[in-house]
Length: 364
Ligand code: 13P
Ligand code: SF4
Image (cartoon, rainbow, N blue to C red; front, side, top):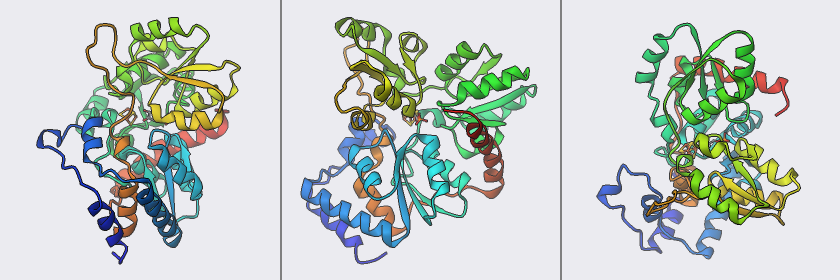
């Protein structure tokens, strides 16, 4: 702790902090998250940003942010020498840097991946409750016995899982490289046990024809994109290309011109000659897409189908838990460290390192 703890307190005091209602306690809806955030004005934002930049330097720390975080955090990560990236690149960047501390603006599994790869570094995240429905829907207690029941399968898990689940896996993959890894394993005659995202699993199966047993998890954000509403939107924008993250349902994936990870979708906007894109992923990615291709038109894919009387917004509520105040808090008060038991970390490292080694041998 130091005197600057007062800065956050002062800024918070300048606002009417809205108290989270009881019923929202375990409901990570965007509404709940937005309501729990003190609203700060531009002047206060500037003060926080300058203080964070100063502390990052002073503590030899780096801010690494995911594309789904608030654009203000993405800008801060870029300006302060950190990076904005997908889940794989965030971990790689942290590992390669000489910083002592990495502030991971993302969700918990991203912080854990950084710790798995860089045990010697201090890894902190602005809110330890920032989770992911895929991670929550695949507990080690349920997953390990499931794997034990299928010993003839090679266990491949998505990066959106806990360190304990990664430790039970033979391979960890990210969406950008999953089809290549599974195609490689299938070519060796291996049967795959895939977890946790059933949509991504089905997509990989359709591309590779691999023999796959699928865990039935899903992403609550991408699950909301609906094919019928997308079809209606596409009819209004005949020239638009449809970009889809493979955590979306298969009916939405089938309509895509490009299916890919967050980085692959940004690259598609940049490299394709078309001017208009309908994008089925978290809408905070528009910040980097717009930077990469300033003159292109980006349209959010619809969430909520025909007949729905309420639509979700395409933004992950757990990602929304990352705030300037949270980042300042972890730097000022040295809190929210990610810890992983060494025996688990070593096993999770082995399955994650396979991904890095494989990625190094093939173009993304
Ligand atoms: P990427 O690996 O493409 O960054 O995706 C992570 C994620 O959580 C998508 O919902
Ligand atoms: Fe998890 Fe979906 Fe949020 Fe990504 S967008 S972190 S998969 S809940």
